[in-house]
Image 1: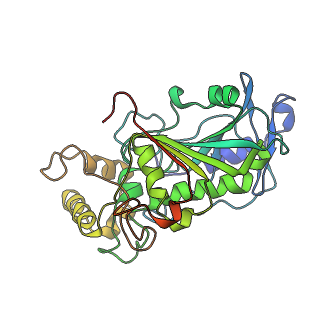
Image 2: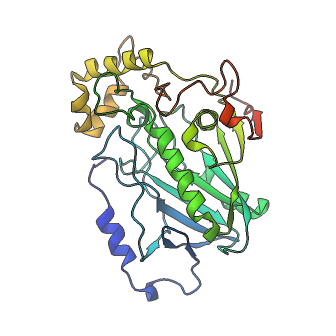
Amino acid sequence: MHRRTLLGASAALAALPSAAFAQNDPVAAGRTGRWRGKRDGAVQAFLGIRYGNDTSRARFQAAIAPQTGRDTLIATSFAASCPQTGRATNQHEDCLFLNVWTPEANAKAGRPVMVYFHGGAYSNGSVIEPQVFGATLAEKGDVVVVTVNHRLNALGYLYLARLDPRFPDSGNTGQLDLILALIWVRDNIAGFGGDPSRVMLFGQSGGGAKIATLMGMPAAKGLFHRAATMSGQQVTASGPLNATRRAQALLDRLKAKPGDLADIPVERLIDGLRAEDPILSGGVYMGPVLDMKWLTRHPFWPDANQPGNAIPLILGNTRDET
């Protein structure tokens, strides 16, 4: 894994003449950009669309959306997954990308939109795995499918705010990535044939927990309208005191100060999560934090959070989980 970005390569691809691509390659345009995809069986696929800038130079900070551009960007292959201890290949800190499958990138179609968040207990996982590709669902369900990669483990959920005031958004940056992705969906999905007023979130295990948490985050209000959690019904969030203790345990293992974590090699940071330590054994828990900034109360405890009450929610479990 390297912390340098792949922006140069992406720019080179985007600059290729249109003759380098098939004449029938689909093109979709939204408020913030224009993308050239490819055919994927009976549907159209737009892969590796950037929704957030490279965060390797802004660790533990809220991500920023890329600037609007006039060039048609190439979206025909998957981008990187977040660094992790899991099995995901092509791991890179620059991982804020999403993928879209649609029956047709027709701005007049107005199809329902289904956004999938992957599992992995906030620490592992990716949507760059064949079992969660969206082509079949898009075709058989006649919907627009979006899958999202985002920051995980320490990169997405390490809470440093009480240890270093320079990181006020730490502890929930993974959730903020998902909100940024949903803002991209709101602003662009119509150009892919989707209806931004009919967005349904669905996810398995940790993906379901991420959705449940978004139900209680004011910043996510209005960005989705239905939800389904397939295992992972997150009722509470981590308190700031225990989240700080976990962060300190990781810092002690790495022999580092909070500010050091912004610049150490990402491999070392991830290796620290593997540590054989009484507190860290099995991998230290990472998840959303009740930081009183982005998450101001538990999503479903002692009752359902007010912002989520109007959102229809399907609850279920996968066969072999919990």
